[in-house]
Image 1 (cartoon, rainbow, N blue to C red):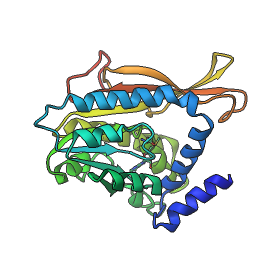
Image 2: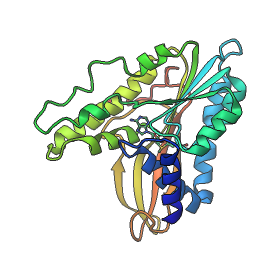
Image 3: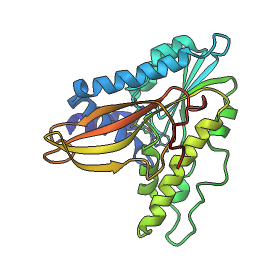
Length: 275
Ligand SMILES: C[S@@+](CC[C@H](N)C(=O)[O-])C[C@H]1O[C@@H](n2cnc3c(N)ncnc32)[C@H](O)[C@@H]1O
């Protein structure tokens, strides 16, 4: 706890704001990763390998700007490789810890873009009773971000998708009915997937899709992390040993099923399609 408090304070002292709790979440991820680095390693390596392979598939003449969405602590981001391959790498997130800022500065061609990738978190704080913004409409979203980055040749959504609705749900006024909350969360998931597909470049996606609680190997519970949205994309699936030995839920090992798609724009549609 002390190490986490110090880490959080260090980021805040260097000017990192935390209006919606993203910095606090990154610090919690940092602490959990420290506790379970060996268990997390296969997942992180697999995500990095998929993203790097996808980036390397970009033709040599089309390696100007790479965009990483939800770059966080760079645990699942092959930043050295991306920095070597592309003229410029843009890391987009709501918060950056000092170590990430320092690494970006060292590499020289890495820029930080502090942005809310839902574009809606502030507006969701609307007074109770005010109509909620329609997540399916308005704003240019990811496509707008892509258009604002000249020479965008590659994008990587790095374990961000399932997190987008969580922060949004936190920001909602209390008392909103469950169906409306789920609808809004699902809308954000769909919007991100549609935004990736609309980018003018290959877009790699890594996301957890399902959480399972295991009791001595048997499934105790299963939760859909994408609020009923099926990405409808064919790709690699693997299991991330996220919180072993009862760390998150007493008596259970909590694992997440992860989907990795090298390029969501490459016609990677699986039989089920999008729902
Ligand atoms: C589970 S972490 C991803 C792990 C990260 N790729 C890494 O390697 O450490 C999710 C990341 O998404 C970011 N995030 C969540 N919601 C966001 C939003 N609305 N806009 C921008 N970033 C967001 C969080 O700050 C966090 O860094």
